[in-house]
Length: 111
Length: 114
Image (cartoon, rainbow over all chains, first blue to last red; front, side, top):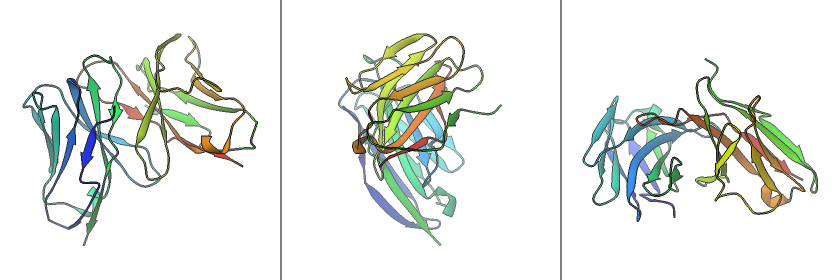
């Protein structure tokens, strides 16, 4: 069962912040975040392994609440280059080394 | 380091023909995953392979689809007797299998069935 992402889409002005949420009904070992631009391959942003862990990539950071099986991706002071579709991928504890991806969140950053 | 190489980038097949999609993982990666993506949708897991072994094929349709990752050469996703509903982008990803490292995706093969 795939994780649920929200919102499905968000439009931002350059410099604004946004939060993307990812929620699973399964016990998770890790959460990955990827960004895909139109017509291109998904690109790895970061992986979160432990409950409560937070990581950062430029002004993009994420947190992982292992108890709630939830992760959030934070886009801070968004740039035009942040536009794309963001996917969370979850690795379930019972499912081995494979990722199940959410439906994606489309982000459009306008000047 | 050439990354994950997929070919062809675009493939057009008539209904009933066979489609063969190839994927060479990143150097040093022994884990290969295939995903399917319909336009404006997410990535659907198909199969997870290591050299000469299928580890998880729970996302593969039971008929017409098969995958292999031989000891030598690229991983192959094979679709026999293609139908219009098989039209999609097929992405291959590879990993080292170690924690702390994500997947590296190839550029995908866009399959169009006419």
